Length: 232
Image (cartoon, rainbow, N blue to C red; front, side, top):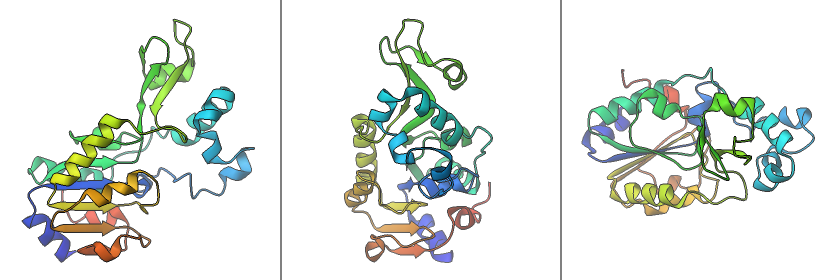
C-alpha cells in the first residue's frame, strides 16, 4: 500500500483500467462466475447476451438483461470515489472500464471510456431516438416501429471504434496504468495493456493475471480494500 501511494504521488498522468471486480464491490454479481444462472435459464449467459440471441429471442434476451444485468440499487464504492478524488487532484486523466453499470459517471468521474457501453443509453435501431432505462422497461418498440436496443456491446458485436481508439490514446500517453478488478482475459479489451509504455504498471486483482511479470507492483486483494486508503 505504501508503494502504491508513492507511485500515485510521483505520477502525473494516471489511467485506470477496470473490470468486473470494481462492480462486484458495489454488490453487482459477475455473471461469468455466477453458477446459479445456469439453473435459472435454459441457455448459457454468454449466449443470452449475444447479438444473434437478441435478434432471435428478444423477449428472453430482455428478461435476462433486466433480471441479471440491471442493478439500480448499486452505489459507487471506495474505488469509484477514490478515482474521482484523483481526477479532481489532476492525477487521474481517464478511466477505461469494461463495466456497463455507469457507476464511474454516477460517482462523478468525467473522462470515462465505456468499452462495453452503458445501461443508461438506449436507442431505436431504426430512427435512433434515445430512450431512458425506465422507458425501455415498459416497451422495447419505438414509436416509429423500430426495435429499441440497449447501447451495450453484446457478444458477436465489435467495440465502438471511437471509444476504443480513445482508450488506446489515453493509455499510450499515461505514465502510470493501474489495472484493477479484471483478469485481463476478455478480448479485445485485454490487448489495451500492450499500448502502455509508461513508467509504472500496477495490477490490483484477487487472482493472478498473465501480465504480472511486466508490472511494477502487483497487489492480490479486492479493489475496494486497496483504494480505501484514499479518503473522500
